[in-house]
Amino acid sequence: LDPYADQWERSFILLEHYRQREGHCNVQKFHEEEGVKLGVWLSWQRHMYRDGRLDEERRNRLETIGVSWNPLDDQLSDQWEHAF
Picture 1 (spheres, rainbow, N blue to C red):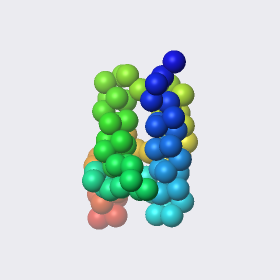
Picture 2: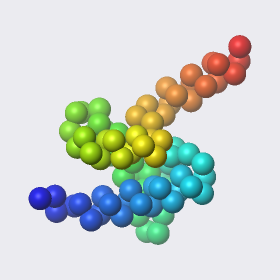
Picture 3: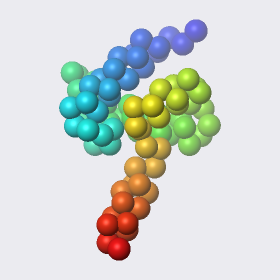
Picture 4: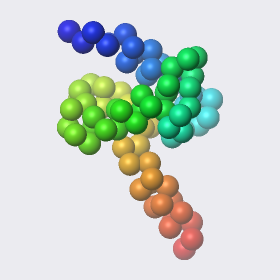
């Protein structure tokens, strides 16, 4: 049983609301939503993903709403495509 499951769920819901409002999931590192450090939370999810420690269900849920695991790489790729 995950003692932090409720916190994870709350952060995920806040991320969904952020995406609906902003149109993307690229939360700035120090951005907060309703007192939750959403950017730090998302950075931690990416770290856990890279280390292979992010639960598959959570990974799938994050991917479903459009979370990029390498947002900087995606941004550079988009800039490259628009340049040519």
